[in-house]
Image (tube, rainbow, N blue to C red; front, side, top):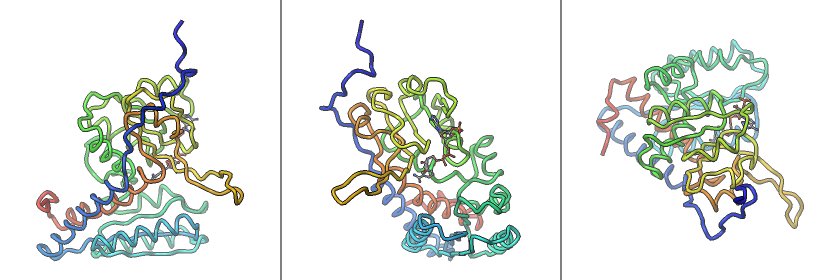
Amino acid sequence: MPESRSSMAPDTSHRARIIDGRATAARVRAEVARQVAVLAGRHGVTPGLAVILVGADPASKIYVRNKGKQTREAGMRSFETLLPASVAQAELLDNIARLNADTAVHGILVQLPLPRQIDELAIIDALAPHKDVDGFSMINTGLLAARSSGMVPCTPLGCLLLLKEYVGALSGQRALVVGRSNLVGKPMMQLLLREHCTVTVAHSRTRDLAEECRRADILIAAIGKPGLIKGDWIRPGATVIDVGINRISVPSPDGPREKLAGDVDFDTAVHVAGAITPVPGGVGPMTIACLLKNTVIAACAQNHIDPGSLSG
Ligand code: NDP
């Protein structure tokens, strides 16, 4: 009887191509900066991105600071609204209404998660759909599903750009998305369908996740469980996009230290996959780059400019 795959030793002489999200994100940002310069020079429009941060979560603060820095580096205007964790829903809604009406603001992002007293869905749906650069509102979710248009959520869009660069033609490929969240899994499924992939979506009730993974030419992991997907679950030569960002504790000579880990067990997967994103340095940098890209698209739409006319 042939040896079962799970007991087979990985071929350590094989190493997957590493998908360099930092390099792709830098190229996306450079293109955004070029388009921003054309928008300003030719049309007198400077795209503006407003971020609302509620509370003082250290990770969110760093993320918001990075967004502001990259927004300014691309030549856009950056606006920040910082509100206390105790903020009332009505006050948050007032801030959104102010930004919705501000013509210098083309994109608005509310940093998630929000404190418990706030109805997150009501806040997201209060964003003017044409300024919802995260693409999470009901209108944009519906547009992506039914019309293949509207604002596309940044993380799945970043994954798609990486796939297009590293795989090329996606039509007919068998794709598995592990995770069905509104923020990542479901929009990822829609984008892959739009590219004519045959898409399966797995989640915590999926019966045999390993077997589902083994069928996939393209495997997207958006779970939030460090190292859940093992190398021997992966189809040899498959392209693996690891969205997961998990903080884990690892031993070091100076005591335990924190590091970031993805949802895929990189050390075993790298010997089976054809191409794989590292964590960090894979999907993460693409998210902010796509946010800037969406802000340019929003600024164009609000000024009746064809984004295609900004191409080099
Ligand atoms: P959610 O917690 O909202 O969704 C997780 C999904 O994984 C759910 O659909 C859940 O299934 C599924 N799941 C959980 N456990 C299992 C399991 N054992 N087997 C199969 N499926 C499982 O997370 P998000 O979608 O928001 O984020 C996913 C990961 O991506 C996180 O690590 C997050 O930090 C990261 N992330 C990274 C970003 C980036 O910029 N790189 C941006 C956004 C997120 P069910 O629906 O049944 O509960």
